[in-house]
Every structure is written in C-alpha cells, then in structure tokens.
Amino acid sequence: MKILVLNAGSSSHKCCLYNIEGMLPESPLLTVWEAQLEWHYPDRAALIVSTERGQALEEELASVSRADALLYLLKTLCQGVTQVISSLQEIDVVGHRVVHGGSIYQSSVVLTDRVKDAIASLIPLAPAHNPASLEGIELMEQLLDNVPQVAVFDTAFHRSLPDVAATYPGPYDWIEQGIRRYGFHGISHQYCTQRATEILNRDVENLIICHLGNGASLSAVKNGQSIDTTMGYTPLDGLMMGTRSGAVDPGILIHLMRQGYSADQLEYLLSQESGLKGISGVSHDLREIEDAISQRNQRSEQAWNLYIHRLKACLGSMLMSLEGLEALVFTAGIGEHSASVRAAICESLAFLGLQLDDAQNQNSPVDQDIAAVDSRIRVLVIHTQEDWAIAQACYRCCS
Ligand code: ADP
Image (cartoon, rainbow, N blue to C red; front, side, top):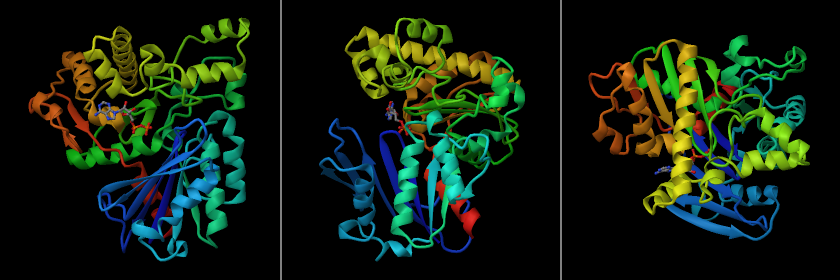
C-alpha cells in the first residue's frame, strides 16, 4: 500500500511516501520519498527541500500560492532526480495531519465533504493549521481520482481526558458551548506512548511525555491513556514555546484590550512575538539562544531560565495528576536534541530518585533509555515519528 502523508504546519508542509507491503510492521518503516515546503519569506516565496540519496536538494520558488507550491513539490515524486513512482495515480491512500478535530472526531476518519466542513468550522480554533490541511486535502482531491484520504487528528489521543482535566472553571455555559481543554500534539504523544512500551519492553502505568518542539506540550499518560495535558482549547495554552507565550494570566489580555488592542493584535502578540523569541529578542530557536548565552547575552539567559521554570511548573502539574511516575519521555526538536534542557529537568526530579546517566544524555541518544541503572524513574529520548503514525492510521482505516 503506497501511502502519501501530508503534514501541514504553520510554516511548513512536510510530505512523505511510505510503501507498506503485506502486514503493518511494528517498527517504523523508512520513507521511500520525502520533501518539504517552507514558508519563511515575506513575499510568500517557497523553499522546497527534498532529498536525493541522503543529499538535501533545495529549490526556491518565487511568489506562488501555497497550493501551486505543493503541486510543484508533489510532481517531484514522479519526475526528475527524486522520482520514485511513475505517476501520482500509483498512490493508494493519502493521510493528512489535522490539528483540530474538536469534540467531533475522536479517531482517524476517511475524508468526506462532511468531515471537510467540520475541519473548516474549527479554523477559528487552529487558524495557522486547519486551513493548510484543507488546502492539501482539496489539492489531492483534484489530483487523484477515487483515492481515499484520511484525516488523523492531533486532538484525538486526548479524548480520554477526564472531565476534571478537560473543564475550565469558567461559567457553566462554557461546558455547553464546547469551551474545554482539547489538547494537541496527540499523534506524537500517542506514538511516544507506544514506543516507550516497546523500548522498556513492558507496560508503563505512569508516563509523562515532554513534546518540546517549536510548539510544546506535556501529557500525563496512565495505562496508555492521556489523562492530562498542557495545551488547551487552542495550542496557545501551557508551556512557554518558540514564539508562543503558553499560559498567561487572562487579566493581562483584559488589560491590553482596555488599552485598545484588537483580538487579532493579541493573537499575533501571543502566538508570534512571545515565548523564547519574545523574551530573548534573539530567536525562537533554542540553538541560537544557547549560542547567544555563550556570548553572555542576558535576555537569552533570561529566556532559557524562564523556559526551564515553566517546564518544571507544568511537569509538577502532570505529576500530581498521575500521582506517580515510572518514565519520563523527551521528544521533538528540543526534547530530542538538547542535552542541557534534559539535564536541567532531570536534576530537579532527583528528589524522586531520578538519576540521569550523564554520558548517555550527552551522546545524541535516539530511542534510548538514558537513566542511570539504579534510577527509580526511567528517562527515554524518543524520536517522534508523527508521519509514520499517520501512515499506520491510514493503513488501519483503509486495509
Ligand atoms: P516543530 O514544532 O516546528 O515541528 P521541531 O520539533 O522540529 O519543531 O523542533 C524545532 C526546534 O527544536 C528548533 O526551533 C530548535 O529550538 C530545537 N532544536 C533542534 N535541534 C536542536 C539542538 N541540537 N539543540 C537545541 N535545540 C534544538
């Protein structure tokens, strides 16, 4: 089964092709093709990054629409040096990451007009992501005849949140209006839950997963089910992130509205001008912040300390929801690559008997337990494979 996965982010559209022959394997398969579109430029030019035998090929496109750039990129599947199939019609199923499925979708579904309408109706709750997914879905409908498309929702893993974790203590009306904690990054949290049991070779009762990328969230997982998480009604809640503030006192927003800020301005401030970028004034990227700290840049140091403080505070909250901890998982860009963030967090959990193996922590671990042998809590670094998780969901929906 040839499965094309489209993963639409706010500033990129990652695409890859898997070929699953026979039964669904337990370990992730390698992709047969992958490429990505990046939107970094003010004039909406696109950068296409694809790989040819491990070599990155980069191509810049001048002012094109998102759909045209995606079309151009998909054609490299069956043309040129990166060609792996003779025609797009060879694709058996297309899987899309959809960030917000609201309370309507609690598992992956084959796309229909009704599902598309529902995704469109949730755009106000995920304005940077749901429109990009819809564009990808509509483009694939135009390009392929009668090929099933599957929506895999980032909110679905958190469907198991108990009411007490999902409810905001606002007026009761909010509950009836569906204003509640949905949680995000569910595809990654679910993948890491499954991978943690494989790495440890046993079921894990109490697990905390730290998904620390540009967007970041924690989940508290009990017996394989999400029982608490830091993102909420929208992906703005919870941890300090690359450009997002995470949770702030709602009174600040009321204060700024009284000063004349519009909803759009506040959204821009909280989602684009805050977090690591806002505090450091250097970058949203932790690598650049760490470089600046080595040059004694004080605001970068302040941003790093704040990032760790907020992470510890939210971890405490997940820990109390679980009332126990057997394993702590680090994943996504920062979780997988920043040994210093992992060390700072693990140090603060020493009082629970958690001990890191410092050498393993420094040694670029992948899908590995990096706790000391006598640690009372295991510490795993897991390379999150959201695209493989989407491909697995497509296989299960369509085979
Ligand atoms: P996204 O949420 O966009 O998918 P990723 O999971 O790819 O993000 O994470 C991207 C972030 O990971 C970068 O902005 C950077 O802060 C961080 N990162 C990546 N590599 C490293 C590294 N070696 N050290 C520290 N941080 C890193």
